[in-house]
Image 1 (cartoon, rainbow, N blue to C red):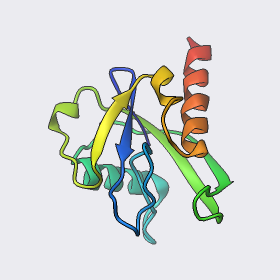
Image 2: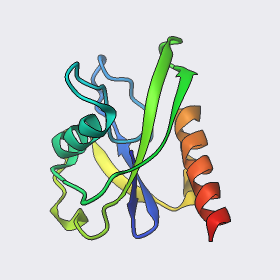
Image 3: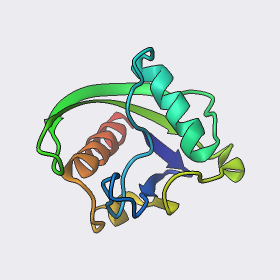
Length: 130
């Protein structure tokens, strides 16, 4: 999910676990369990990873792409939530860090291309709708 904190993009520094693809920054979220829909999954994942329950997740779009890491097809659902009001309560339970970045800072990070493309698409959509 795209998580916004005072207009900044909150990214996730993953674990140094060989079973998890590490990168300098990524989104919070994960796999959909068999009995979940995408909306239920993102709520569960954000709670598991950050102990937060945002008031609203807004569905943005879905996309199919080839994973830069596994080279396998992936289907993704993109949601957005503003966590500014509840961020003081976050407790990181997965990964090394959660850090907010300005849009201009994100382009200099070592992140998967799909993460950058998603942030850029969202940013341009918001900028063009103002």
